[in-house]
Amino acid sequence: GTVDAETKRFVEEFQWPLGAKTIDIARTRQGLLLSFVNAWKPTGPSEDKDIAIFFEDDIQVSPYFAKWYLEAHERFRYDASVCVFSAMRAQLRASDPNGEGELGNSLPADVEIF
Image (cartoon, rainbow, N blue to C red):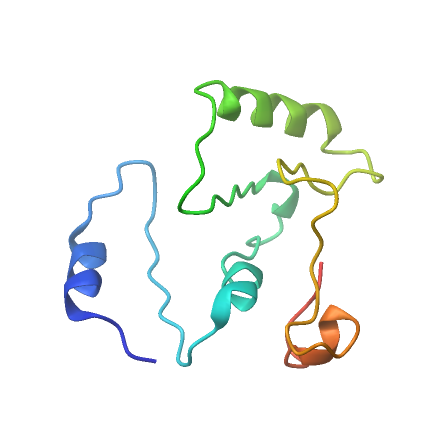
């Protein structure tokens, strides 16, 4: 895909003091759903130690959110019945943007639904 030159320059020059920074530019336009699905993958054999938090660009969270999230993760990290913590309303759910039933029907075969 194409990337706005000013945005690309800003991201490349941005100094991230908390660890490695990786820039991944999609080859094609992904849309919102695939942007989330492809945004992050756990790395290496320490997958249970990797944590990701995704925020919409218009969300506000409490200053205590990170503390709550990390404590919840620590409490439930080995509980097989818990796989995600969400601040979304319970009635929201992924749906097929093409209206073809289940979400996986419109995703490429190599995309994992988790």
